[in-house]
Length: 258
Image (cartoon, one colour):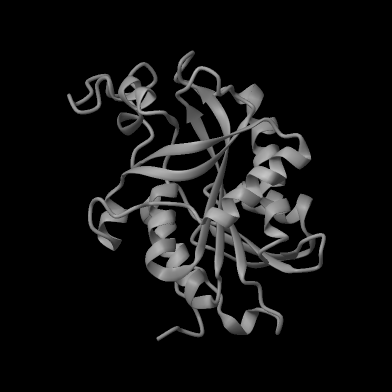
């Protein structure tokens, strides 16, 4: 039974207006959640900054309410936030994140709209069995691709590898404290490249799985901040353009679903 106040979010039904939002955009970075509220939404106000999971209520250009919330880094944290948001009445979730591309033609500064996920996440396996399809809502995905075209944001769409760890799970060794990767990680990036996987990130596999099991629309758009065929380090010079593009794509598509 849904609660009236949520322990991790730090707010509940009574903190929302009568015309409560049914769509949330999720950012791993609390600073990004606040930036979306401050710079992209109208009449934004803070709902909670509990446990580092910041949430803000604001309004889209079409006047519809929306939540900009922090999911935390990684799928376990995201699964907690989404569970409570669904109990709060959220019916559409768009993850706005960052990622590393593994295809040569997907450059830093562009965005990737994920259509589905190759899932390597323990959180997803707590929700559905291995082999359960982790797919984005097709209508939401099409809306984000259309938004990217309309806004002239450089974009790509396809399969995302969604993993639990930033270093070992994405075959990073040069930038890691642990250069000794397990055998199952060595050669993984090249293997995934030949499977036409576009990028690595750390949440969407679980978000998509939850969407299918819980019955909400789930989507994901990420700004590309590392071109892994060139360097495993993030390209901070490209980050602002990549994240801005992802935010604009998500919010434009959100207008059709909020």
